[in-house]
Length: 275
Ligand SMILES: [Mn+2]
Image (cartoon, rainbow, N blue to C red):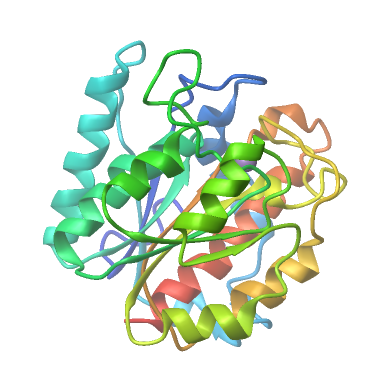
């Protein structure tokens, strides 16, 4: 399955956002969209997990957002503008990051189109600091900024962060479930009947499955556990999604990029199943 250039038009759009300006540990997530596309030929269009085939869905790859590197505010504004344009055309968008901060302008655009949006955050990291090294806009603060947009948050799988961030999650999120993904029943109950945005930071996976990430964190879930979780979303109203923090060049085997392409397939199919 080759993402780029397969179709000019589609109701579900793949959009690369190669932004990694605030990466605090290992930079390189800007290479995820291009590397994932390169290996996408290795992935079948049919997902036996979802029992759906991309060939039978209305999916198109719209390439990358062009960004002025070095200008954080302008980059975030351009990402939001592009999303507003696509959502205005009635598209459902799967964003390939980029670092996690890209979720902020993307979700902000979604809040203009979907009332009562539920933000499901799957990650090894809490990412809920108020500031990081004095900065309000960082991959380490993105969930706090999204919380401030007034959306309800479900944070799942986290295993690293400040004590205050764990406390913040317990007190302020609709659902806070650290360490694993065994929360499907409860998640489906709170998400039922409302628009859901899914933000998937691939470092929720154990580094042994997914070593190509900017901030690896031991003790993560397996790929199979993640698949079980994602297929459990079927039937919910998924209106948008992103896959962030994949940093393929840190994995010389190339397997992380292939994993990214496989996840893109499942996420695209989730969006298509919600149309
Ligand atoms: Mn993370």
